[in-house]
Image (tube, rainbow, N blue to C red; front, side, top):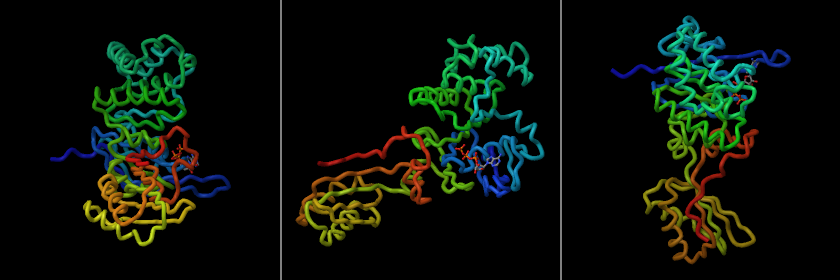
Length: 345
Ligand SMILES: Nc1ncnc2c1ncn2[C@@H]1O[C@H](COP(=O)(O)OP(=O)(O)OP(=O)(O)O)[C@@H](O)[C@H]1O
């Protein structure tokens, strides 16, 4: 028999009263099943409803409607059972300012009633796993942003939860600390086989690390799949060509080249420029089409000055779904630009 999902939500909703009493639909219809052991990312712009979704599933907020079970328990009627089985690391640094890291972790063990010997073992293990040895006797107020975030994660892991919720674990960290934190998150997952559900607005994180990406916008999940499938199904590749002369009915050449490569119907947009023509072709498997396309264009008398193949990013997926770019919505500037390949000059 298949293992039941560790999280199961049906039509979960949450509204708030916003400024002036206006109704804010933070989560509109959250329906999903999350498999045990998976790593899922909620990706979306600020205010999309990611944190609220996590807070509903962790019983920190009561839903306005719908149902959800976490580890087999109902979030509304059995919140204590749910909480006992999960770790939650919120956006704000939860570590106390004046306690030493080791004491902070030990207090957490006492809070969960682990017992002294078990707490000591667990704290030592987490200090080692999260590379906190050097700062274990320092007060959390003296730590860097990345170190504090690792203490937060250690705190969430003291009770050895089966399921860990991380709300924007790496926001505000510099790229090096982000990379370091991710190494730890992935290592913890390997060690403990935990299920991870996290929110992020870093496109690259969702793309690289999550097995399943749920794109959230305005309180709804608007796409839900692996990153490669989202990109292949919802965005596709883009070939940009610069031609010396006019386009003059070369659409047929492009369509034939795509058909020869066994690729579906391309979308073609040609615009005259001062140099000649700039053509954007949207299609699947552009890498298989591009070489034959250039040969075919030359054979038809067109001079190709430049050709570039861009593979889609999750931003292209979001753009395709909403008409807006995640990057334009106050995203950080360190998200990578679209990966380009096969440029011929
Ligand atoms: N306690 C609250 N009272 C009123 N409105 C709220 C409350 N919490 C969240 N909201 C609103 O609900 C919507 C969703 O917020 P939420 O924090 O879930 O988004 P998010 O996707 O996590 O955003 P961010 O990436 O900025 O954390 C926003 O419009 C937000 O202003």
